[in-house]
Length: 164
Image (cartoon, rainbow, N blue to C red; front, side, top):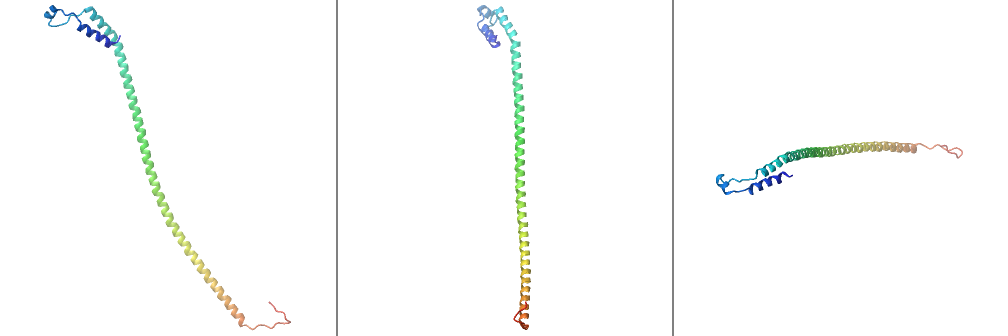
């Protein structure tokens, strides 16, 4: 039987107890109840109490276990979220650092590329100038040779054949 029902039965017994005017006068307003019925309900409460207390204790233990497990799970989730957040922040920092480094490398490569291009252009100009100077000297030598040949007397040809 339910312990709460037994307690309600005992309360009803107290309310409905025999109220004798004489008892009321002599016992100063106290209620007279049937002792057998009272002790029977009290015995049922005593027998039901261990089962109710055991059930309540088990329920409390289960509740505490569920709460403890929920707290552990919550802590695991929070720890995981913190680790994930730290990883994301770390990754963001690494990405930002990598991007900054990439920009620096690109900038340095452009500077070095511009320097190499300027050196190559200067080298090419030098080659072109030397080639132009060399061609000029060859042209001057050719002109000199033409003039020298033009000023030399022409040998007479024999028998109408020319030697070359």
